[in-house]
Image (cartoon, rainbow over all chains, first blue to last red):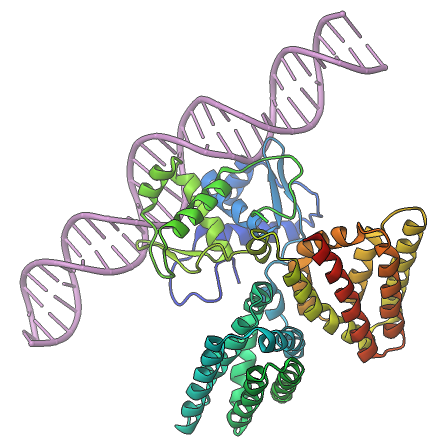
Length: 231
Length: 231
DNA sequence: GGTGGCTCAGTGGTCTAGCCAATAACATCG
DNA sequence: CGATGTTATTGGCTAGACCACTGAGCCACC
């Protein structure tokens, strides 16, 4: 996808986004290597048929993402071979990456569960319980508890009180969401998932880090099976 | 990091970058919530004392990073509470976050070590050995082996063959680098670090995932002590 | 009473034109 | 030959204008 975001329902094709694409295409065509220089702004703008202002926006976008470096008085140099930008994007290209997502979840959430067991406050616990109840009632009424599932994991992440790890979770949250939906689509999965959550919550409640880590690991493993079935 | 890249030796403070900072500060001051609207471009540009073109660049930068959404005919709305942009930035604000970095390393590298033990190829192993030798000779000649240390961990990450986890490591690599330098500055640290690396390498060579994970965990814990001393 | 279309004010999107500032290559001087 | 000044080139930024989209209010028409 272009630079914007996960999804854009209907609206707004920004010119600079298109320009970014064209520049990246041009780079690929001409086989530019790292360190190579793009044409001068004036020239490039003319070639692309846009104003310098718009081209400048596109370059800002590319610079922010780390593809180029714009140097006053010197030129625009290629910093990265383009196409290797955002984590999420990089991954979405290959669709069969579910195992990888599981690995990442295993790494992050297991650690987070252990931390949560050590650091959770009563309100953290309350948030987890609330998510559990939400999931339970949703399942009872025939739902799949997707939202509750998500909230529970978010609550555990929050209870870990580790902003850095939380950030990394956010980084892959989109990917996780997809696996979650796939997982909970299986018949008896919601119930088993709820069960897994309870085990995790209990361990965290008891401040038992090792048990929390283990429970989380098993829970993630369960999701893994489902993901495997899907692929 | 600011928008550009890891580091900027000397050059070029771009105006739009400063504008981004000011806008984020303004958002924080006025306690804007997600979904809130920024002032109109014309007004905001006037208030900040820059042209609309420059403000527009700043907004592009913020949009690319996902902080705001610029909607034609509607306005600029806050998508994310700002200040929570790039992982690295968010953390650098507080200086005493070293424990957090250790937690993240623990989570990611332990898992990566285990994966590496299962998946390493001979060339992965060769890269690790090479890094070890480099570190050893550097230490022997009075150096601290910083580069070798970095290369070793990079080799382990590569051996894990998990692009997603590798991406996440890249995400926090800047932070890690800082702790690494601090850690290896301690007198006998380089030698102990090398020892730890050897244990990790041996486990990976033997394809013993559990041992690799354990060795990595201990190694990271050692760094943790140092980091603590520093703080 | 509601539904659809119209208008209009406000807002971002983009362009043109121009001058300023940094860089690097080159010419010049000692 | 080296240091230094000059200049062409390139990006940085501004100003002002006009276009396009959005949403709210209004009104004619069911």
